[in-house]
Image 1: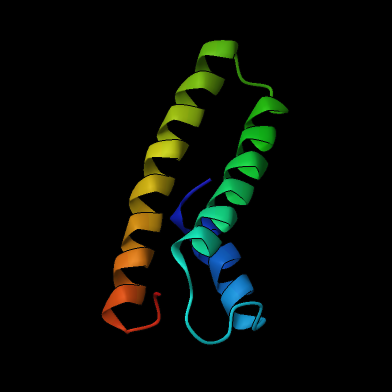
Image 2 (image 1 turned 180 degrees about the horizontal axis):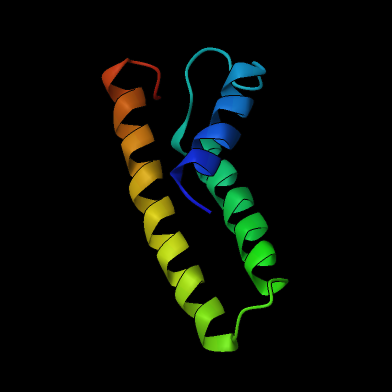
Amino acid sequence: MGEQYFKGVLAGYLGANYMCGPITEWQIDIIKENILHYCEAMIDHSLLSYQEKEDQKRQMKQSLEVYIQGVKDEMRGMGRMR
């Protein structure tokens, strides 16, 4: 689960015009939570050991946080963030 997946989900929401006009931080945070739950479920249902699953979840959460912060910064820079 990487940045490409995060980009795809976020682009899907934005591209489908679920969020036209200015975007609030809480809207992006809701998308982030949905991505997080989906990725965690995918990891939980994998054949990895418990420790490998925990490691992947930790890495995924860190990557997601960095990516979402970048999206917020970009939206602010474009004047789309309220």
